[in-house]
Image 1 (tube, rainbow, N blue to C red):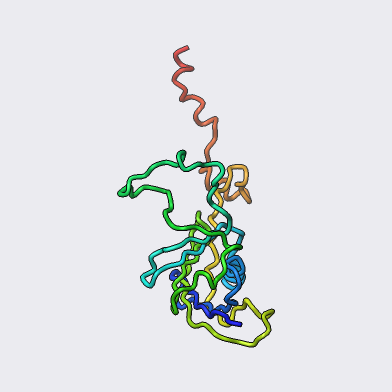
Image 2: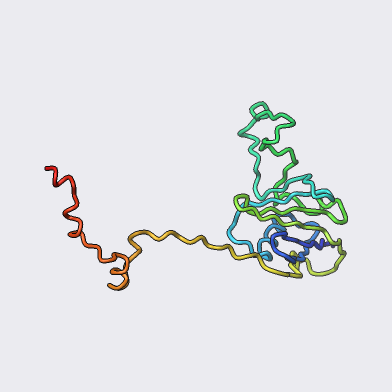
Length: 198
């Protein structure tokens, strides 16, 4: 049997690295779960792999779920886009689903480049490079696996919540006096000009 050894990078954290190994006949859904676990991602957000050329240009897209609804949209109903339309949201990349996509069918380069994108609303982008293909007699049950970890994902900072008026209270009389500055409603009772006009 053969397995692939990949190195995973994350630009947002210096020296962040993961070394992972998967069997050649494993699928990208297994790859997704391995990355999810060894990177320490939180939640269960949408994600996708992009198979890239040596310059990191995307060639194929492999999504967690089928993003195309072929039955709901016929070819004649699809919107038309100009070739120079930079605002087009339509992807022209061939698309596949992780559970149906085997690694061996997408690895075409000895140093295959892959981009893994997690959480489209708060994107985290990981760059993956094939290190080598290894022939092994190890127990297949040992795969997939992470063999090396360096650095962790940053802990998201929680935004402070605004304090509601009812949450604020004076703890003692001294503070109340300091803020009120001796204010007394009776001091202003004679200043109402409308009362004098009546």
